[in-house]
Length: 279
Image 1 (cartoon, rainbow, N blue to C red):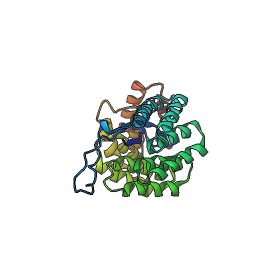
Image 2 (tube, rainbow, N blue to C red):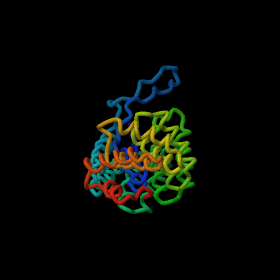
Image 3 (spheres, rainbow, N blue to C red):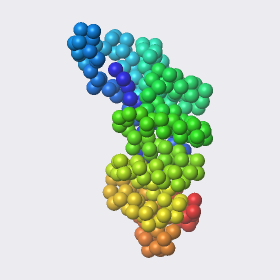
């Protein structure tokens, strides 16, 4: 049983994403194991199913599911206890060390976080999920070149299914490093692969705004604000800033009014009232 642990960031604007600790959304077993190679007699072996799972693997799986749930709720100490039990049951599980790295990173223990990610990659050098999580951790440490190398390695893994997510993470990291042209290109690729992800649209909008591509920025944020369940203070403030840069005072005021009426206590509403459009 192989766990795929991934970083999930929601759909916050760039400024929030850059300050946001890596969060584990879920770890789910990859039950569709590939067929085994033929044996010496030329007979194909059966697929590996739940009946083939050892007692130790079952214990590790259950502990990982619990650890993931605790982590997603921010209960780091309890999550760490469950990860330790998972590792005790199966010390060869890369996902356990991947999650261990995320937990230690959230707890601010950089040495153990990095050791955990590196150990996970020693167990499985082709685990793209670990590469992405480790890359995001390094990005937060301002080790941007090392992070970039890991993101590229993850994207180069054959048949990797989560490339839009990794491209989003890479693009945010590039923006954090001030590599705005690279960030635009990377986020554009992520958007083309997954146009329905509002996180990508919002972050791409922010990058385009910073690069002076106001009309293009307007296009992407309109798609987000056009969906009632996606609108929030950040998206309205982003739209108001774009209209301000375009010199459209009517549009600026319309978004500002929505911001005041719907999110009066937000930092974005305060920024609008104070005219801090260049923050």
